[in-house]
Every structure is written in structure tokens, then in C-alpha cells.
Length: 298
Ligand SMILES: NC(=O)C1=CN([C@@H]2O[C@H](COP(=O)(O)OP(=O)(O)OC[C@H]3O[C@@H](n4cnc5c(N)ncnc54)[C@H](OP(=O)(O)O)[C@@H]3O)[C@@H](O)[C@H]2O)C=CC1
Ligand SMILES: Cc1cn([C@H]2C[C@H](O)[C@@H](COP(=O)(O)OP(=O)(O)O[C@H]3O[C@@H](C)C(=O)[C@@H](O)[C@H]3O)O2)c(=O)[nH]c1=O
Ligand SMILES: [Mg+2]
Image (tube, rainbow, N blue to C red; front, side, top):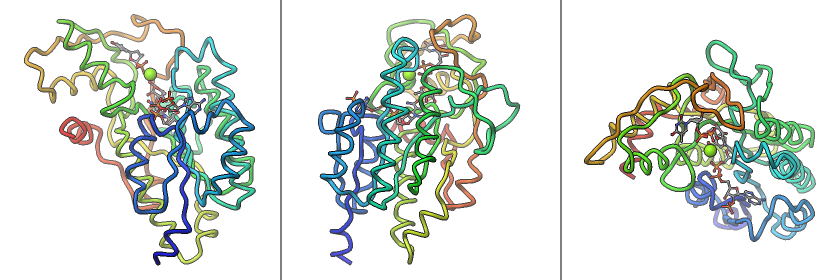
């Protein structure tokens, strides 16, 4: 058993990001974690990706690194496409070459947001902004590689570090008496730790299986992995202040998307069904409000 553990090397990208940081911790004990930040593995350098993977010779690649500045991507589409579109394809090619699986993350922004109700994995994609288009391209490049893969589409990620709505609200909420937050975009705010923990549980299931190659092969595909329930950005902001320890809480006013113009268009409905994840892995993320509570006392 100890020899078995020694043989496993998990290469994780983007380890200073929200999900990458949490993954580096959650994957402990499942193998030797090689934590690659941008200086070790720059996803805009496709040749470097190949050489680093060949040098590390991982038994699993986990790729949470991405170009995530949704508005900035509108004016940097080529860089966003290299990082979100092409790099995952190169990682998948290298995974295929080594005969190892790839775990990757994608987004609710691959959908146009016009559906009534929750999106399922087989729903047609129709991204409305550059970020979403580049993330979809990445999904398709992975699927075309022939490698075994899991793509977890998540949404509205937040946590105790990085750039996210929780930290933005706490910061500007301490400075202002009144905040305006859009109330007509609906989704599930998902804690970075939830994503990392569920990823680790899936990896543990794979490692415990008798025939790992066929385990990955049978489960290869796209899965929605977001918190349970749904709210608006306004509902999320309101919950943050309800749970916060601020002495003076700001008034959170509801506005419409039209009243908050941004370079990138965002989907009105980002709700995703997590039933496939439950069915295949027996795993379900907690309700968004419960996870937010846990995050805020973390
Ligand atoms: N954030 C969100 O709300 C959502 C995210 N997702 C997806 O989940 C995944 C994880 O996102 P999250 O952790 O929130 O993202 P973050 O923005 O927190 O982290 C992204 C990481 O990627 C790294 N990165 C960016 N460009 C490069 C590059 N050229 N080479 C190497 N690393 C690079 C960043 O490095 P550095 O620290 O040096 O800048 C950062 O550490 C991504 O695939 C994202 O698309 C899906 C839905 C929602
Ligand atoms: C800061 C702020 C934002 N908003 C609005 C703007 C926008 O419509 C909405 C969301 O804000 P942001 O720009 O922070 O969120 P955004 O960067 O669009 O978040 C997205 O990131 C990418 C990476 C994803 O994959 C998505 O799942 C999603 O999490 O909230 C307000 O209404 N008031 C505010 O004070
Ligand atoms: Mg953002």
C-alpha cells in the first residue's frame, strides 16, 4: 500500500487560485501533490505545458488554472483562448500520451441563460461572452483528445482568498452605506472548498477501484458541480451581510442587469442540476447558504 501511494503523482495547476489553493490541501494523502503555480507552468506557453508534464510524469492531472477575468477577456480574447481553450487540449493530449486521466473545471457561462429551470449536462451550450466561448472550446478540446477526463462545470466560486463576490461585498460593504447588486441573474454561489473536497472524494473512489483504467473510462465526461439551491447576486450579497460580523451593515438594494452595465454579457439563469454527480458518484454539494456559513467561520 505504501509503495502504491509513492507511485501516485498528482499535478495540480493554478495553485494560487481559489480552487487550486483548496485542491492542494484537499488532495493531500491521495498521492504526491506537485503544486504548479504560474511560474512553474504557464498555460499561455503550450510548449512549456508539454515539457513540464513529460518531466513530472504525473499519474493524474488536475487543472483549475484559467483566465477568469470575465470582463477583461472581452478585450484579450486571444490570451483567454490560449489559456482556457488551447491549454486544456494540450494537457489532455499529454494525459492521453501518458495514459492518465485529466480533471478539469468549466463554467455555467457556457450556457446562454435563457432556459427555464436547471441546466443539465446534455443541454445545448451557447456562450454569450468571450470567457464562456473560450471555456467551451477547452471542454471540446479535452473531449476530442481521446483521454479519460472529468470536467466539472461549477458556478459563482467564492472563498476566503482570491477575487470573488464574498470578499468584494465585505470590502465595499465596510466602506459604503448602500450597495446596488443585480437581482435578475440567478445561480448557485459555490465555495472553493466544496469543489476541492468533492474532487478529492471522486479521486479517492477512483483509487479504490479494482480496475482504475476502466473506472475512469466508464465515467469520463462532463458533470455539473455547484452548490445546492439558487439565489441572485443580490440574494448572495444579502446573505453575506446577514452572516457577517460587521458592526454596521450596508443597505443592499436590488438593481437589474441593465442598471449595471459591463463589457461582458452574463447569463440570466445559471442554475445547474447536480443529479448526474449524485447518480454517478453519490456526492452532493451542500446548499449554498450552509456552505457560505461554513466558509465565513473558516
Ligand atoms: N471563479 C469563478 O467564479 C468560477 C470559476 N470557474 C472555473 O473554475 C476553475 C477555477 O477557478 P478559480 O479558482 O475561481 O479561478 P482563479 O481566478 O481564482 O484562479 C485561477 C488561477 O489560474 C492561474 N492562471 C491564470 N493564467 C495562467 C497562466 N497563463 N498560466 C498558469 N496559471 C494561470 C492564476 O494564476 P495567478 O494566481 O498567478 O494569477 C490563478 O492562480 C477555472 O477553470 C474557472 O474557469 C467556473 C465557474 C465559476
Ligand atoms: C461588484 C458588483 C457586481 N455586481 C454584478 C455584476 C455582475 O452582473 C454580477 C457578477 O459580478 P462579477 O463580475 O464579480 O462576477 P463574474 O466575474 O461574472 O463571475 C463569474 O466568474 C466566472 C469566472 C464564472 O465562471 C462564473 O460562474 C461567475 O462566477 O454582479 C453588482 O450588481 N454589484 C456590485 O457591486
Ligand atoms: Mg469575476
